[in-house]
Length: 438
Image (cartoon, rainbow, N blue to C red; front, side, top):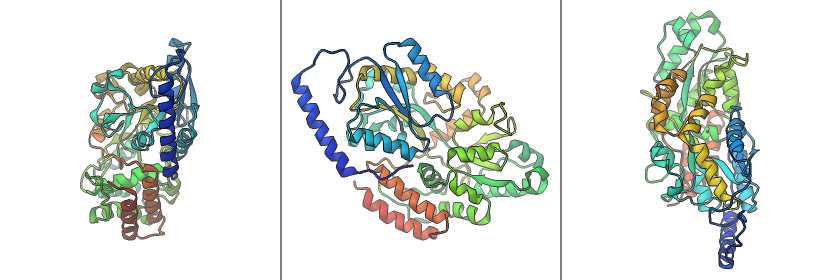
């Protein structure tokens, strides 16, 4: 689902400077060249472009881009692979924008970056009529691509948190799939007591390293206990009994050993590998894990041994943070008409279906979740659809880099025992109040 603090004042200054440059360019008229000159507001120009994206852990993205390149030999897309850590991805994109560089054309952005990039004029506003399939997408995914009701990106993948579990071991112990945190802990104890091969396994892990995944897992715990980080009016409201119950569920997991100590270093991939290696009974992660955990190349020890369910919560099924990725066009890119066409290509229903089959990443077309053939291939689609439809967004704020850093600091300090949960939430409420202004 990783951020370093952004330099907002500098960004605003650069945004103003960029606007003046754009105005001067507009007054100068069109040169008539086929290729756009970068930095202009018009979505014009055809030719080669670049695609800045985080590290592709699925291994399938190059095939998607190759499909475009084979059909558009004069408008080839070059993948610019950024780090796996989303904090570092965002930082490189921010630096590229602050330098007004044309090195990145299309940006593969986390859904929570839209407000920041749009407010700083780092990405182009997009006319909705250039993207005719938008009405077919899950509405919540389209909202992630908007800032002040204007479209700035196109949702390509969505994401909802899922509970992966060892179905074989639960079946051997005669245990039902848990719907609450207490049921999950009871299931762990029962499996460990009744199944000899489960002794020594840890109960549960999510993503608890100090990066964006921790913001996601913290938010899910708070939301699943009936609390909020930021309320419907956009105001921080995290110092509440409900939020405390959610955070204490995580801190209790670490203190009792239900969550292994090593999980304080887990990002998505570390947790996935631990689950695939048979070290975890339950694991919170994204849909992409399914295809990798089912690979028969020897990398997974749990092929056909696991199931997928909704996240557990305090008194029933939990609440996922809404994840996913949107494609945006850099304000400073060249060949923006090609960028529009590439985004439409990647956003098409046919291409999203291929991507689901090849990488198990969540599509944004509602229709694909109801496709019988896909449901047979990916039994998790029903709980995933429910997860996405019930998901809560992370704070949609301009200073998202600062906000998520504050959340990560508070959560990490509580999980590592440096700060008591109540004090961590009190301090976080104060920090978020200073960062989020209406």
